[in-house]
Image 1 (cartoon, rainbow, N blue to C red):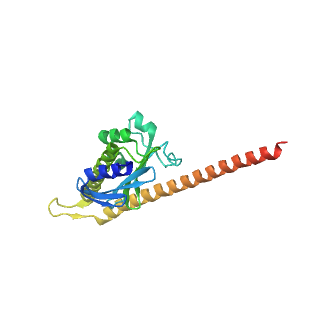
Image 2 (image 1 turned 180 degrees about the vertical axis):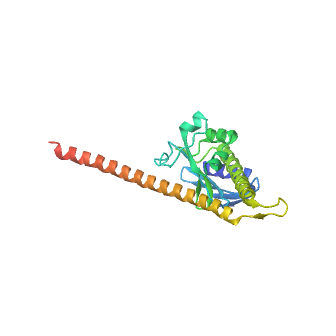
Image 3 (image 1 turned 45 degrees about the vertical axis):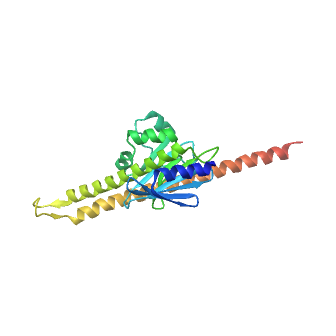
Length: 230
């Protein structure tokens, strides 16, 4: 059995009702639809992101050049994780709630490149320098993503309940809800998400321009050296 087949078999073994579709395995874990997909030198594990106003950005510093180029970096009080990853996103309390000790331990064990909300998905990415995957990493990653998705659903439901409770007025039994208060809470979240995404985009544009300038200067130095040589 080749490395790709081992990786797919590991995903089939952990996903309920697993269905193999080329280099993808689709099934359920902990009640949520999970897709495992092979890619060049690695894999992705993804799940539909629950609807809501939030952004999750967890990126390994050594994995990608843009990793530090995020608007904020929350310190989680875990020295090893704080050194290796940039943890960012909005709202802060939601992002922090997704990574308690058990999930941080799992991330440190198999060291994914990133865990992000991308195109309506919560996506976990891992790249290897040598071959597709370690099967135990795949099992851990599927469990991790399923747990994070479940926690995200729970946190968003809690936020909705809190918004409703805060908007209640009148008798506890026959009172009404202040719709303006709910609209205000939603407007604040929309603004915070929009501001975060705008800052992230600006930082990445700046990073891209800086890298481009560095490359241009490097090439210019080489050309100058060649022209100057006897």
